[in-house]
Each structure stands twice: as structure tokens, then as C-alpha cells.
Image (cartoon, rainbow, N blue to C red; front, side, top):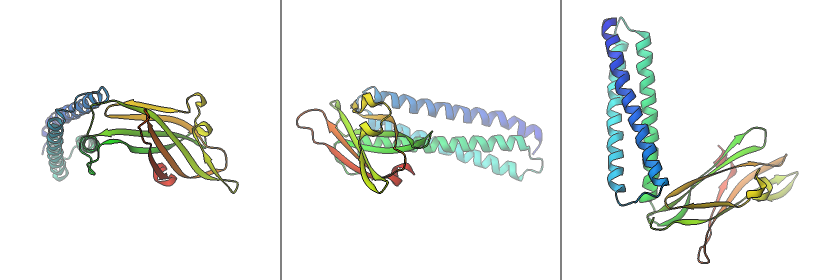
Length: 235
């Protein structure tokens, strides 16, 4: 294969991949915004099918890029710059496909969860290390599955169990949140909501478990409780 032929191929591949990445990114952001804005659930099945179709199309693009890479690898006059560009484009496309598949699974969990149960629940809980030592970022995602005809609101409560200097301790929000004026973590949404708070643990404190309670507003609301091993949510 001549260098001229490879050079002609490069802008075509870049154009295709560029359109694919731009289109997919815009689609996901658009869908995410509509969910957060209280978009109706009536057409979600159709949109989910469209997202699945988009993922299939991008997988086909990825296959084409793999064929291009194989062709370049077998060429005696291989253009290293072109090869590196195509390989980079393929990696970006694969990451985008994976991200969209994760988005699809997330939306499916809201519309039709595996257990078939409707109501409020905790989707994910993560604690990420920050600076300086002992600081963490708490990220919590709440979802309301199947029934979305009403807005849910309430308060998130949590405590962290652990040991300090041989003594068993249970730390609440008022003990670990950096912003002491907002110990109550409030939520309000129809489909899902992500919550984030900065916290700091006392020196020499060794955490072992995080307990979370979701308290819906209203006298009839029953708290939803979940417990997580510290190592499972900070790994």
C-alpha cells in the first residue's frame, strides 16, 4: 500500500470516527438532561431501542477500524503516524461504546429493574480518596424505579462504623461532613439524582462499614436501609 493511499484514508477515518464520537456524546448528554428534567417515561422503550441501535452501529464502525488496522499492519510501507491515529480512534470509540452500554444498563434499571420492584432505592455508593490524608468524596445515586408519576423527596442519613485507638466508634454526618451547616443531605427527584459531599475522617480512625438510610418525606414513608463494607465502596 502506498503512502499516498494511506494518507487519503486517514482523513476519511478521522471524519467517520469524529462524527461517531460527537453524535454519541450528544445523544447521551441529551438523554441524561431529559431524565433530570422530568421527561415523560411514555416513550422510553422506543428511545432505549434507538440507543441499542446506536451502540450496534458504533460496534460496526469499530470492526471497520480493526480491519483498517490489520491492513496497515500487513503493509510493507506502513505509515506509523497513520497507524497510531487509527489505533487511537479505535480506543476512543471502544470507550464510548462501553460508556453508552453502561448508560443503557442504568436506564434499564430505572424503567424495568431486574427484581421488578417499584419504588425508591440506592443505585450506587462510592467514596473516593481526596487530599489531604483522611479526606474523601462521598457520591450517592438514588433512583425511583418503574413508577415516575410523582416526585419523591426526603433526607439521606448515614454513619460510618470503625475503630480508633482500640475503641469502636460510629460517626454520623455531623462528625465527618466538612460543611457542618448541611449535615442533612436532602434529595428531590422523579427519576434519579446524584448527591455528593466532602467528608474527613478523624486521625487514626479505621473505618469498616458505611450504613445509609433514605428517609422519604411524609408520615407514611418507611426508611430504606443499606450497609456497605468500607473496602467495597472505596476500592
